[in-house]
Amino acid sequence: MLNQGNDRKLSMSDIQIRFDNGAAYEDYMGKWSQLAGERFVEWLAPASGAGWLDVGCGNGAFTEMLVARCAPSSLAGVDPSAEQLLFARQRPALALAQLQTGDAMALPYADGTFDYAVMPLVIFFVPQPARGVAEMTRVLLAGGIAAAYAWDLHGGGFPYHTLRQAINELGYTVPAPPSPEASRIECLQALWQDAGLSEVQTTVIEVQRTYASFDDYWRIVLGGPSVGATLASMAAGDADTLKAQLRASLPTAANGSITYSARAHAVKGRVPG
Image (cartoon, rainbow, N blue to C red; front, side, top):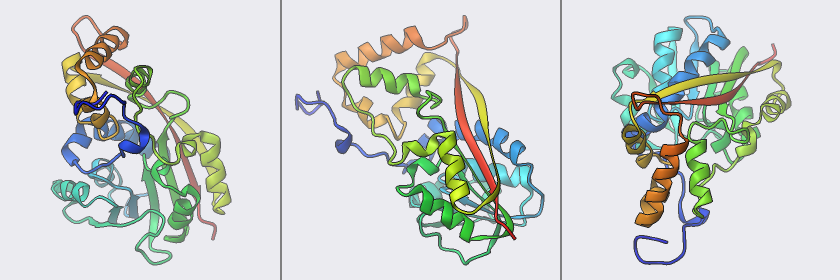
């Protein structure tokens, strides 16, 4: 049921996941990206003074952290959304970063340009993940590191898994990324090995985020790029049912705050040479 009076519910073809609002993305996913990103960078244990490329840098949530944690000698970011990049350029820490629009499957850089190339929460959005990994490998120097982390979509590790599941149970469809299988840890390992990378390693990252209240949580998800359009399409009765189900199922503390856990898979590998 649509607000426009149409009696059918949205199908996946009616809604596309778009990341065009940097501020909304910051609340919805940027903070989650940084929580997982902190653990990811600790696991990478990168050298200071290296050249970095952030593939799918979006609004700069993770890119900003690289400046603080890794002291890069150079930093580039590429993303298909000009709107997200506009938000990223407003971050003071990224004043010197080279940010541009581009495609993860056809990176606009010469061979052997960077020491590190990372895909934070991006690999499952790449229509041809193997091509994306091959491109990261191509632009790395010999000995360079290609790495990524992705929510465990199949194992319920996505930060809004409970929300998506409840929406689906009401008969609505939330759009999915084109390559969800790429979030499997065994798939990530195979992608890195097939790209010819050596010393391939994987790990699991567990993080938690606390929302001040259910109203805070609901405000944030209404702006979410993967669920916002579906929520806005719901008939009032369905929306009320969804909110009641979520209030009952989300882990709520005595003070009304909600602490939710998420799980990501990470992978890294080195360019031989």
